[in-house]
Length: 82
Image (tube, rainbow, N blue to C red):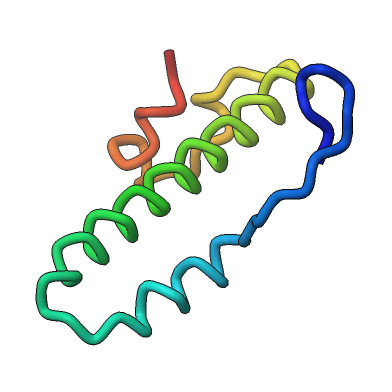
């Protein structure tokens, strides 16, 4: 991985699936709160990424967010409208 000083450094990395598999493999009951917290964190990050992508699409298409929300979903999609 490229470091801030421009040099290549060896590092251990894992994607989300690998981290979740690692966490699932921990048999301890004490790990359950961490598992739930981590899954919630991942869900929040993915949700933010999704919302950001939708907003970029709306800006690129130069349309009103309200015009892209299907009838009946105005309350559920209100987070898209600033």
